[in-house]
Length: 371
Image (cartoon, rainbow, N blue to C red; front, top):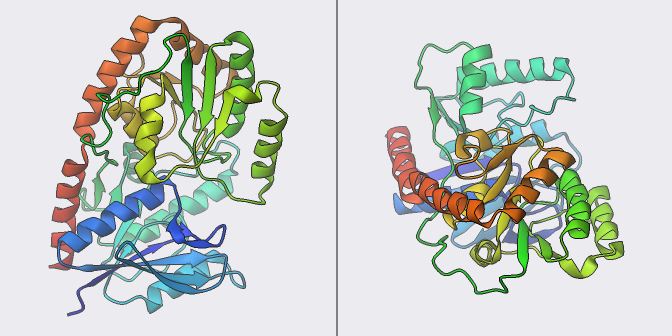
């Protein structure tokens, strides 16, 4: 029996920008990295099969074999189906579950959060998604959902006799690594706000930029840091860079893309973290990591963020508009005692999502699968 588990995904190493020697710095990629580690610890060999916009490739990244499938001359679903037909061993379909994929029967699927919750998406498209999800349920042995919203969606629009076919298993954080105890000392008269997200539309970069304009005018003691990957040559990236370079308060705005290992330092420097997602969100790694570091959070009331944030207890939960974000951030800026209390509750919350719990549950799921 081949002791290999194939992980099928649209992204792992950075095939967006042609940098296939590094893992792309997003939540999906972090999840698959941790999943591959769990598979290795069980004595199996993880192989990541991913779509590529920069040609076919084969790599080994930190003991993980990665195979890239060029899809520039075909649609993504056809390319994804080709990956499934060419991959060996047991398979985990780790993305694209909302598309009409032809699954290898009896495999495992993962839903990393509903991405069709954008209210501007046509109703016809959302109906197609429901049909595609029903097809996935029919073909897959089990689907792991990172938030309660996908589970509720399936119960509402799909039919399946086994109530345990869809497993709720939220994302996790290493609470031993992401700690508040080693906070970097800083000027008490300065306030540092962190946007720990990819520079993308769904992650709320536009309302965050607009709120930033107002915050920097209203509060001269505030600095704001954007930390997250971007896709070069995209219109959004060009817009962000133009905004950044021409900003009248450029000296108080910072941008840098950190590695996974460097992110803990970014949280430890922060007084407030903002998670302003407008659609397509599971249980956000950024939110979990900020919670674990005891950072008070302003969070959008979108997707799996509602599974993490209790408004007024471990963060402020708002509709992700410019005005609502600005008002919530302003509340935390002006109330030191609220920041301290929310930060303490944030750390306590994170312990319920510790990585050891996640790994133990995934080990049980995989043990059942490979047996």
